[in-house]
Image (cartoon, rainbow, N blue to C red; front, side, top):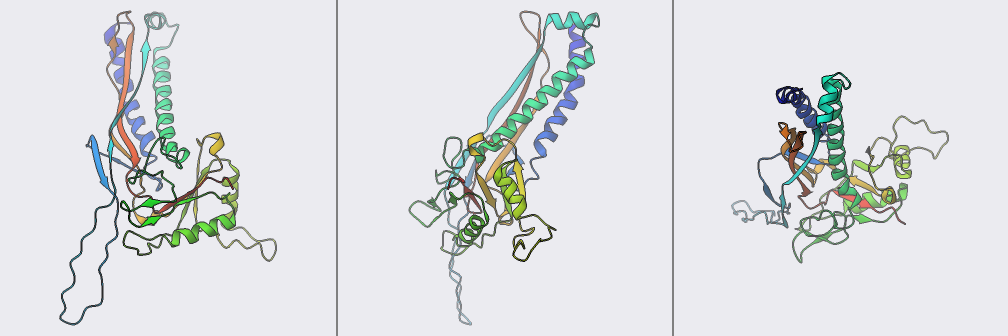
Length: 309
């Protein structure tokens, strides 16, 4: 098998790989707990949402006061490079030439494994938002605090809000969370009316089982007092890659408040490059993509619990 044949086979894979990479990434775009979009910017600066105050009753001929939307905490997110590669050795080439290895099968397996690995990388990155929600090991909010903290500041030294809890998931914990969310105020001190509609839990965890029971629809009570007052109120999203010790975590979102602060900007979708001949005669095929990830707004419309007490 000659170089032009190798190039031909890789080019045959390229379209299916590139399209598959887009599909595997884009399926997360529809989840309201993330804010994912394409972007042409290497660095992006975001300024967090701030309150607007000054509305008041006016007399018949009175001129309204002029106010402006204040600038909140800012954060800049930078693009990172991600990649992988596979190779076709001279031994592989010889085995293909006599039919020991089927050419199409060989290249299809390489493509499928590369796609699986890419999908797993992105999924792990998305889970980092939750696995590290209570510290700044991976990401920090615009005010430099963890995603879930009890002292978020709209602006330095200004009004604060709390979106962190420690309760084990149960009905009482949900009641407390709903109350806490409804009391969150903006930078001007106005109640924001946060009303959670989505819960995120670790797949197959105790919290997931409890959440599905609590928010299940069309369940007929077996006795008086078994009526579920939260029936159908929340969408339950189970995520599969919570770290073992963190499967007790659970999170609430109010998806009606605009885009999620959990942002991923895709600058370049991962794609296959042309084969490169190495010094030992093997062919190297690189896979490269560019994206950025971070918390691009103050996380006032979400709440997280460590599930520890």
